[in-house]
Length: 448
Image 1 (tube, rainbow, N blue to C red):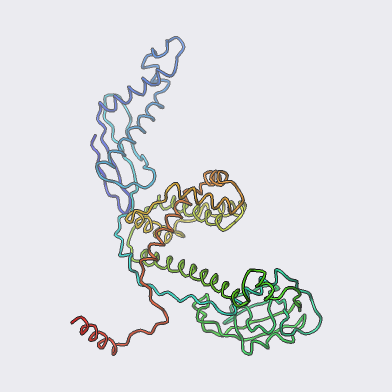
Image 2 (cartoon, rainbow, N blue to C red; image 1 turned 120 degrees about the horizontal axis):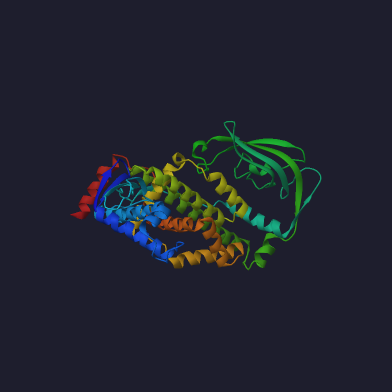
């Protein structure tokens, strides 16, 4: 069987095969022989029906089966002979009529893995901020745990230091709303409002009563979530709905109850947890930044049909993430329904990163084992209060299992990129040209 592969541009390949007459005849004979063994015709013993009777009754079915069998053999031969790395199913787009004693030409269309060169992905130079825990964050955590043990009761009159107010909060900058919260809880005299520190912070909330409104100005910090508004002047608008006083155990009492020597020891414990959380968040930022950097430097042409299938797979992967985060089945089902027809153009960036991720995983031999899958299923089962078998069955049923495996593989690649990166403190001052010669001279002298 002669097989040729034509590059039709991008990832598309046209596979053509000339199947000799004797092979066609042999395959048709086998097909009718199998039918004869399985079906008994009236007036004939089983397996003894004439060929013309078989052809009249099952000619189309046998021809279709033989055509698919030949196509499968052509695909296997093309993979073996031409080292094709196929993506998805190969489509038979043209085939001549199958007749005994006559050759037939099959034409198939396939998509192959994008051919691209990975840029250097180890030692990426990335800016990494330094994780910082602010005192007001620790204080807010302490107060939050204290509120769970005590009770807040409404009081008449103006708010005093040590009391609390509930207020509808809105933060804006350049007339754009950055944050809003209904009935947010604010501590009077604490000094921080919605994570910002206005002028004379300890006095800002003192004297406010139910029904009062107030506006304050505060500068957005340099590490504010949105880079485009960092350092800008923000307006904090409050509508006071209640003034409250706390009744319950003191921080000192709760520290002892929690097994801490004093409140300061409790604060340090909270500081460590918050720091770990921020480090974890920075790790994620670095991982995404590293992958984006590699993908942006990679040139490739995406396969269209496979891109459509991959887009659906990425949706399944996102559904698995939702499950991890505790989303309900109804929310996940609604997400899957709304994302079913998501356009390929919308996920091209994600697809490119997925191919890059897969290429790095293959190059570094990063795989997800069945034991790792089972351990993750057990962890998720404990989290949602179900048995591992139930969770595994649900993942199989809604197709999330493949997304889970891809997500776990992706995490391994992201971790590798992060661990191999070189980090630069964004706050560090760049070396001036005047200092460089001195530094280089010292280095040269040291080497001598």
